[in-house]
Image (cartoon, rainbow, N blue to C red; front, side):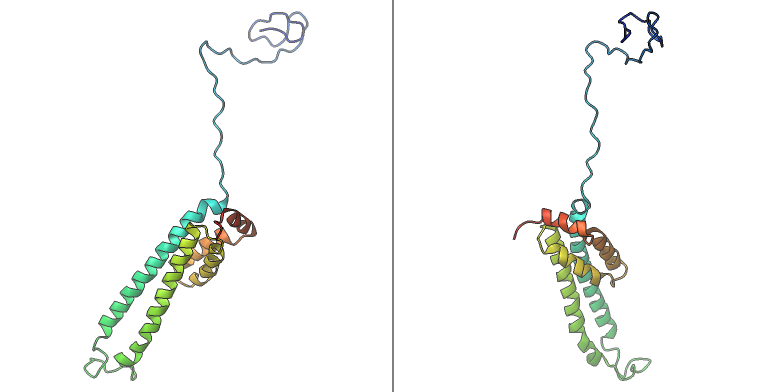
Length: 181
């Protein structure tokens, strides 16, 4: 080692120069021959929140649409099987206050239409998020509010969607990523 003040040779491990008394700064150990010093590995790059979660949200909305269709069809078939010729006079417990099969089954087209409509809207919301449509964020937020009432999966998806897409900085981030047209 060499003293930075006077240039005198100092023994390794010494804290002061024997000639001028200056403090010796610790110097790094010499590198062995043939050793290449590489730059330090860069840290992870943090992606913005919307960009990290947008694909997951799109996929979950499409899965939620398929879930709505499957549960709607399953419920329709189970209800139809249970009520098939069961609410007439041959029902062991009698009729339910005059509600016979054909009279109250008239609401089934309305229920099926609502189920199909919510499933289609979920598919459209998922597709618009996956394709980064400019109107996709607003549609997903609106449908997330309605999905909050579909406990438990709709509630979880609605909260997740609102957490990702509703903050003001999320609007700017989504608009910068949105595809034109």
